[in-house]
Each structure stands twice: as C-alpha cells, then as structure tokens.
Image 1 (cartoon, rainbow, N blue to C red):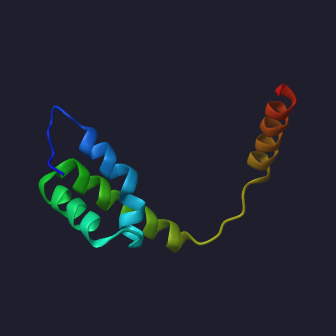
Image 2: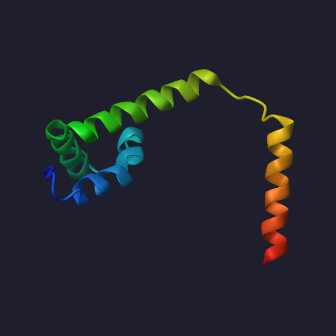
Length: 85
C-alpha cells in the first residue's frame, strides 16, 4: 500500500482494517502490507498511534456509569425514532 497524496483510497482501506490489525485478526500477508504502508505514510502512522492510545485510555478508564440525564435523552431519542417508523 503506497501512500499517494493525490489518491487517499489506500489510506481509507487501511483505516477500515486498523482494528483488525491491532487485534491480530488478519493473515500475515495483509499484516505485512499494512506495516509497509504505515512505514511510508505519516498520516496513517499517526492514525494508528492515536487509535492505540485511545484503546489504552479506554482500558485504563474501566467501566463508568452513564449519567442519568444522558440515559434519559437517549431513551427519548430511541422512542422518537421507533415511533417515526
């Protein structure tokens, strides 16, 4: 996957597979192709590092209770959507 600044399609394809890459859920050839692209593409490398930091932060944060106000608003929105259909 070469990074062509005029054609971001390779970067978009990579972005769709970053979670699989981080979780080790892809074959060796695909993993190597992603690593080759990341080694050459600053934007994708930054995106990968950002995603890894986000995952680490979420793991450290643990489970948090959803604020009641948010839960109530969400329930109201769901009911509104369901009644519209």
